[in-house]
Image (cartoon, helix red, strand yellow):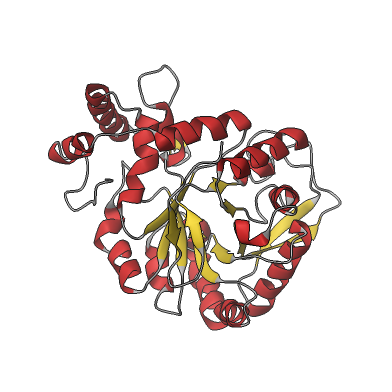
Length: 343
């Protein structure tokens, strides 16, 4: 089952990642419980398929995702995988945790709570805590999680100043010491990535949902700046929270950016689906493959919550899509005219 994935470099680092990666939020029981056996089977299937990039975070299940990912990777050679996790939150024990309810969107049994901390000490503690939860001796990529106005609103200047004046030095120190290989952000907005490049050297940005079949605004600012600064994009959320996986033909309410899709987005997806029908292309396959046409994008990492989802994603990722399909989308104004098309 091992695929011959293309590998792409992360920035100027020595890291080579498969163009399809594993987003491990579901391993933290995102929205619904996944039992330990299914979680390990899912990760094992991804490993056997040849995927080498695994992305997790303390937030995902309040430590549960890190524990499960570490268990899956512990018995394979360190050079056979690239692991990213995140900093910016500290987990602390919570004896009153309501583990039978969804907390932060996760159905997790882990009795912890999370607190933002982008300081030097907070990032160092988060890094050490993650090593313990993972049960591993290495983390390759350390991403600052959920910095930005979309998460913090009016408090973002306060938290961004923490990162710029204090936390970034911890990231740089860990990288210089060889304890991590790459530094980045893990965010849902592009503007904060541009701002981050003004405070230091970032090797990559895990950007969720902002460069997709539906959104190409980063073509005009962020992506050129990434190329100029030798920073790679790891593209999360390629389905824009679901609408590019489900389409709009069914009776279910399609989701866009975690909310019911507005009429304008539904219309746009319907037009894309019409071109898909014409060329016999699966919408989800197009959504998964499109971002990799841009030279700044190193990997696409959809969330993979089951063995079945891993196998279906592999099929979508490997589906043949004719170049005429991409050109038709562009000719109809459904893709930005400057968007590089997959070959």
